[in-house]
Image (cartoon, rainbow, N blue to C red):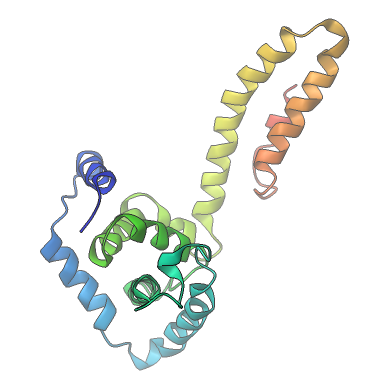
Length: 201
């Protein structure tokens, strides 16, 4: 059903957000999402989500035997498709967003479909993943800014120590190296991210 790592995750989730895992409840919710019908007004949204799911199935961990279509029974790819279909139906306002396939695939390495679905649902509801995948990705921008601030705090201290302990004639070069390092780490975040990291030194 799941590996020892998942057992640790389930305990941590219960302790942190007070949600206890119940296989029967998780299975019932998964079954409803997987097998439930989509209303006529939501059909276009569902079809678009599933069209993207079908494109991304073969792109998910392509080097892993578990997700190869040529593997006898193609269990992994079928499980992944089922999970992503259930996630599309779970909340049609979000549907499927690229990236969900890798997270769901990673959960499948450690657990069965029902447990993977429950874990993903918990991440969506209690760990702000719903905001990350929401329209205009507000959670992604928020988390990007949090990472920037953490980098500023952590790398700022490290870089200051590195620069201050350097011989005088290479301090400017060390400072530039630090800027490049941090710039590379935050380069993927949008322009709304704090720029103080790069101007601090």
